[in-house]
Amino acid sequence: MSQKLLFNDDAPDQAARLRPLLRELASDGVYFGTSSWKYEGWLGSIYSPDRYTSRGKFAKTKFDAECLEEYAETFPVVCGDFTFYQFPSAPTWKKLFDSSPESLRFAFKVPEDITVSTWPGHARYGSRAGQENKGFLDPELFGIAFARPLVRYRERVATLIFEFGTLPKRTFTNVRAFVERLDPFLAKLPGGFRYAIEIRNPEYLVPEYFATLASHNVAHAFNAWTRMPELPDQIAMPGAFTADFTVARALLHKGHVYADAVDTFEPYKQVQRPYPPAREGLKQLVQRARKLHQPAFLFVNNRLEGNAPGTIEAVIEAASSDPL
Image (cartoon, rainbow, N blue to C red; front, side, top):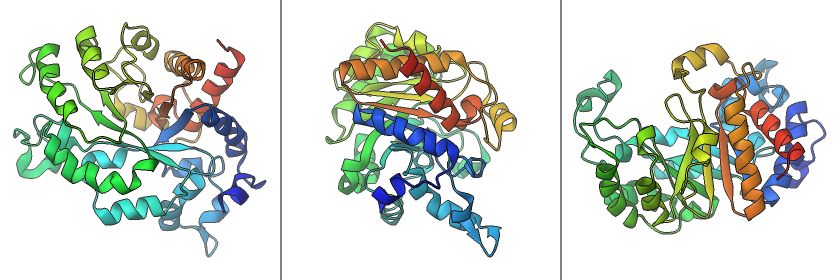
């Protein structure tokens, strides 16, 4: 089935352009994907509208249930952001993996139950709001509730990403306090998975932090985010490559608020505001991975420029025209 679809002449134009480019990169160990996949704005460019039509009308339920299969016809990997908000059940994992071809790899954000030190004071957290999170950096909870159900799908898991929001001084007075808590947690993580740490405290990007990750072969997730240094600046930091693989997430312009990016770019039909620093950083990561023959998992969010597939296409073109 996948072989037939791979060479489908009826693929939308953008998907048809991207497929051979992404296949070539994947053969070199460079895997480009997007943050999530259920975007109706990609209909006609990545997704074929007629596949999601019922009785002459667009069927959103059909689209949400089936578009991942078509996504996999173009992209080799995807980042599942939905896992940040809860521990998926065994049926949820089965449905997800069964709904896509075996060739598709997944990155998953580890639930915030592991990475949030104090629950935000938001109504959606109910009685937990503002309370200390007892599961923060608990390796046993992570292993039982998240890693263990994924073991059977391990070959399809590209990386597991621990995303830490900006950590306040009341939680860790400095980076040393953070890595003293992080180090024993990393030491107890189950084997068989690639792990990455994504932080939002720019002051933590120091040798002590990088060395802690390197001692466990855990990747620093290079991230384009509103309060983080630009990707090329992170890449240039001594010791920033902490594992034998690379992970990056290009999420937002520096200084750009997430909610504003949503308002500006929805429904994500096309690139609206190219962002050269992020493109340059991604290009450098592509070139480095190909030169060193190391795996790289690079994810782009629609909120970066307005259309993640368009950003990826531009980065690939730049990397190809300006080889190392």
